[in-house]
Image (cartoon, rainbow, N blue to C red):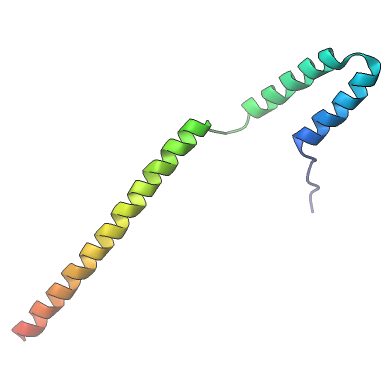
Length: 87
């Protein structure tokens, strides 16, 4: 089983604690943030706005599918009734 890395916040907190005692906090902070941004930039992620837009599209699509399923069910019942009537 692969080990799960600690959360980024915990790592940053530990580095800040170490840097504060040596007086290099600002330099370390900038370096770690740049490294973190670089690593996050390589991930296949979308912005919050894009995620929200896609979630809204999905919600509308699901509502349309539910409506179409209801209409199809009603049409099937109507068709079956007509078939039964014609037999």
